Length: 237
Image (cartoon, rainbow, N blue to C red; front, side, top):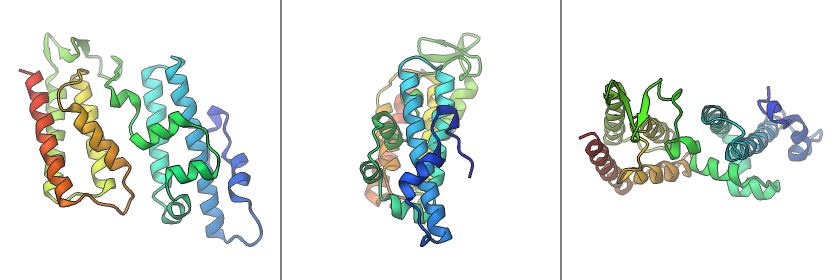
């Protein structure tokens, strides 16, 4: 299993001994589970280094976003393994069990999206070369119609998904994250009700894989999405 943390000076192979405490009684499945846990440990440490590097302005917005997205995706992929989830329990348990001191990474894993996405911090490279003026993506003096259409379409996609009974973490979190990213391409302004979307992304990210939203929560999310859409649309008028 290849490691991606070598560039950050963190080796999952070195961590493997600490987590697995291997002995001849381990089955092949147990050995694989321990190995994946060591990879998760490495992801957390690497993500913490990325977060600190960004806060110190040692890397650009684009470099940070790409690295953070990659590590968050790897973390989610490793957590798809049922045996790993059983051993992992939850982030707080894993952090305490292995004495992990990585507060920036823990926060980012809990929120599930890079800080640049959460706070709409974009470079011109990320906006496809559009000029950002007054917090709005513009081309030729007007709004970037393609970006506006994409964001509008993503609002509709999420609401339709909820109406089609999408209510699991792995169904909704990617859609909401993509919606937020598309909104950020249009505006960096913290418009009214944008924070409601952030809160739902974080809430759903903290759900266990087997958890689902209740009917009441789905209605609340639909209501908040409608409010956010109306606020977003008002910015464009």
